[in-house]
Length: 421
Image 1 (cartoon, rainbow, N blue to C red):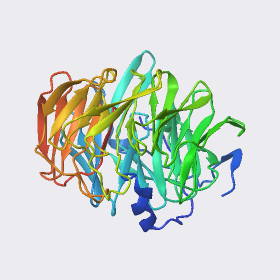
Image 2: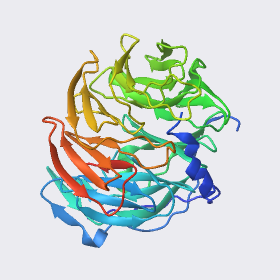
Image 3: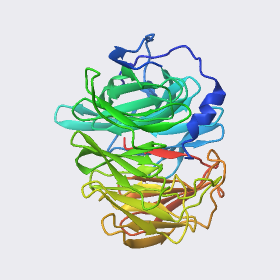
């Protein structure tokens, strides 16, 4: 059974070049407080493969990967290529959080991709379905689409070029293409926003030239907290008990229990720009860079920030890594894919490297952040490691460290994400 969905489309004003910039995630107007409904046109339609949907015995997780010129959907268990969707340009993908959909950053905004697997409740029973994936005609318009954040049952899209913040009830995507609630940042910038469990929104503060901190506004648009003590603010991660960590050029900005606080870096310039959190741990995993003038710094230390104690620990890995190397395991363990091809399992509290699993050959991070490099993606008990040099992808069992399966793909992958079905 398939449900109809609506299409949300605005005028396509953003140029493709703006999408290619994406405000450098791999590098380091007037405020609108009222919640507004986004304008949209409604079109009848159905989700992916309505007439071909197949009922399954269990959910069928899938991977959604990008390559230069398209999107490949893979069976997450067999690594079989289910679909190859052509889409020109440099594409970025982020899961919506509903176990089925993915947002694709395109010139016009965020375009909804249906991975084609889902579950439905029928009385006391849950039924799983699979169909052909589809790039839908639903586009959530924004200028230069940036970060997508899933937290507490909500999904938030941030537009870097216009400061538009679009927030959804994640479960509403089961009914099709929901309308967002929309607020705007004070000025456009490469930023991020999080909807908190109390209904307030935390979002970054900045301009095109400089980013300085973050603020929180309640459901009525009233500012309730603010900090401008986070130069170069970039990225976010949620830890246990809804502690929100944001990266700065001199440490971590924390928001919890209604207040901002700062965890200083170990160096005057200690930039943290990419982070991974876990509901199973109060510790946030982050990168750590100290050379402000480097064209591309290849750090060998990662940061572990304890959001309860307000302390930071640095761990020397003995190998460098990239911004696509960080992940968290099912029990909150910190995972890092090094340029020596090893997947490290780190105790987030002690900082001890518990395991080093060899997965791929040595590799070197390219200077251009849009160029493909090995990527780590974690879903449940499995880690997926791509090797674009060989056009391969591997499944690693996090319990044993064993490489369970390897597949050669028709294209060298860039980004890797997934849905659980």
